[in-house]
Image (cartoon, rainbow, N blue to C red; front, side, top):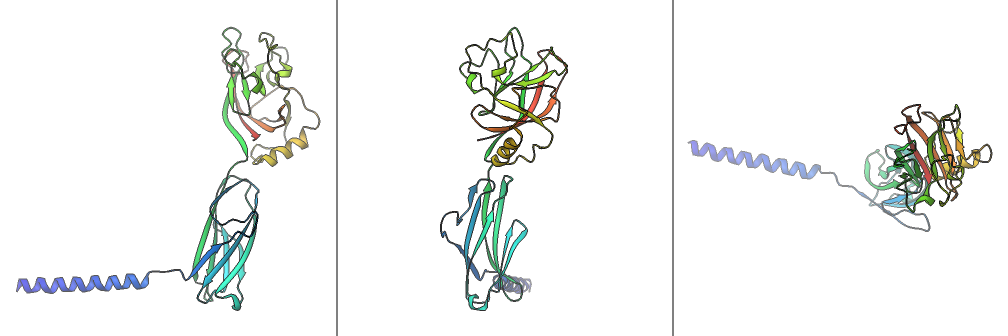
Length: 295
């Protein structure tokens, strides 16, 4: 009897598994629309790509189905950018073109194209991932020290092309790469200073054999570091502000200052002062800052 009951129980379990299997199979959603992307010329995207901020691009897409397409919705991330109502004559195959300007802020953005039927049910979708990379160089948490007079090993010079900092004794053949230096001016009330090597104020550092780049600077209050999110923004800010009132050195530096600059090589950039540790000419005095500059 016990054996008979076990057989019945096993049969019931097999029956339940079979029913569940059929239910799972029948309820599995399969897209009834396929999307393809075509390159119809320059700037057309057909696959995942990496672009620069503010690039102009085109998507030419075709949605294909056996029947029933009534609209196409295009999203960037979770935001709907376009809703296209498909005419009945194109219910099995619809081709459209989406023109877009990419974001100015670096990041990863998914562009999704979805087809819907008359009941508002999604029939299928396709996403292309666009990665926006910065077209400028961004250095964060850089540190320069007041120059020391004996060992001359304090990192007191900055090269914006590489982000490297240098000491007088350790710069070697890289002097030509330096765009500015930092020091504490004891001859004026405006102490903390950045300067171009062409205006070298450090009498105890002999730069007679160096290439002394003539960087120009201007402290500004109308431009924020956050707004300078592309090489175009850096150039626009530079052109608008560096046409007059520039100097080869900027004094009275303080936390929160933004200084626009243009290098001897013609690159526009910006410096944001994040911290100065002491009002002192001591060799332990330093300035922490961020730099953005055109590539």
